[in-house]
Image 1 (cartoon, one colour):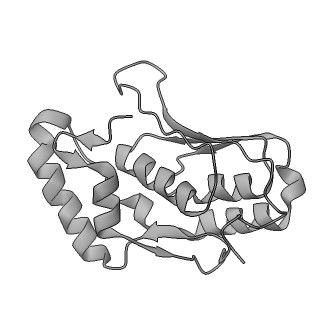
Image 2 (tube, rainbow, N blue to C red):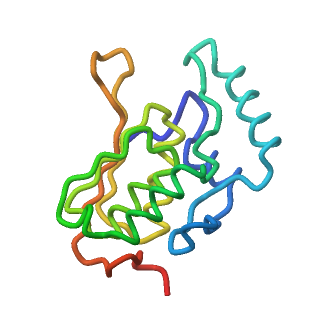
Length: 168
């Protein structure tokens, strides 16, 4: 996958603006999250302005937060792995990939993390790797293609119930 938006390295952008943190409701999972939100938001807008003539609009950095709704759903999935174990799971609007990662850790047979924001896809891939979720392969399709979505897929069959492999 091409990890650049014009001259912007997506993974480098995530790594330079976020640090690994465990969200309060799901300490089993680590995510690259913004610690300085106003700085990140401002730099995203600056990158957006610099790239706008060639690329359109860069979305706000929603991927850099562990939103309460995502934390609650991830917590539920980890506490009730029978809801996803052995099943295919779609995390639509994945952002950081939190719920997708939780589903993989809970034993989902296949997880698709769908996202339109290319930087969020990079963050989701980095977050999956940070949690030892194997088989993540982010891909981005041309946004002008009808019905196209960006996605990363993770397969998980060997995770312990309710735990990601890199957590104690």
